[in-house]
Length: 412
Image 1 (tube, rainbow, N blue to C red):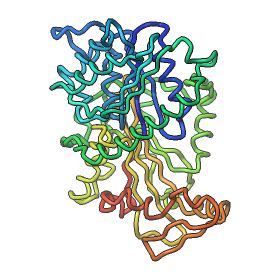
Image 2 (spheres, rainbow, N blue to C red):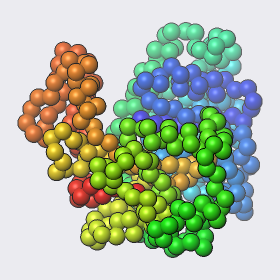
Image 3 (cartoon, rainbow, N blue to C red):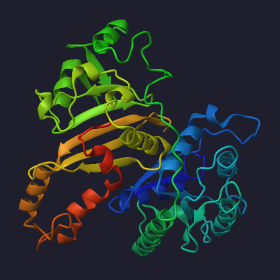
Image 4 (cartoon, rainbow, N blue to C red):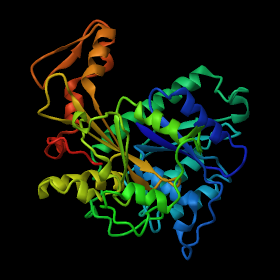
């Protein structure tokens, strides 16, 4: 599960930030938590455009896609901070990311009450029309005497408190599971698979379906190549090194931007006919509608569904297993949403690989085996059998896409 934690203070030093960071570290095996700030958000003004604030856009996109939200609120004058109240105003006026979203409230304060009154007020706000969050009832975690609660490394020292916090978080995980079953996905609008519009990174003046698009586009923008260095977020590589790195991946990788233009695939196989999702260089730059132009209309609708599902944030990834392959191949496709710095949709990163060798290796290493009939096999064994790994889980997760994927076509 992926949660976001909202720091309810805009102060540089905050015990509620410490509390969320402790939760993120201490319970990382249970869920993934991303801590978000509200320090650069202006006071709510309905005459202003919320989209002009980067941090508000970030909060909107992160909350929309999260499985649940944990809000850590201080207590100022018996209520929540003005900064947190303002954020909730912004996110319940033109946009409503909290609607039907599971929310847990925690709080830390200097005094014994541990933000109890602020939490009562926050529950009322989250229940208001326009917010409509599903706030976990009861289950209050109130951290009093916050100055003494943490050690120098930001850890809560009292083990009884940590155990109670873990119980509250376990209850929230169960609550998210229940609420998620009631979630209705956003309706998917018709996708423009033929790139009729343009985005900031679209290279204009060249037909996307031109088989020489790559060379012409690279020349037009003076694209670097060879031993020219590229500074990445966490590294410095030449273009040649980047190509070697990506081509050495044990997966077939593709990227299509949020304008539905196919821009890249790695050269993991020298012969396209040996690829699980066949691609050729002449397709680079193509419209997705062109890449999948040979599919019947019903299957094109499945392509739209995958793109629209990821664009809407209904799912962060879509997985499917392509049927009809030989026994030594489990043709697995993973379509992963990508995001711009403000959290908005940036396109699809597709990974295709044969899962069978990985499964065989796992079974050998753990001493387990597959049992059961075809399509109903599960992993059993004396070692690590509670892992829950099963071919049923893998195949079932992509059941809605089998009509799209059974030809081996991929969302390139």
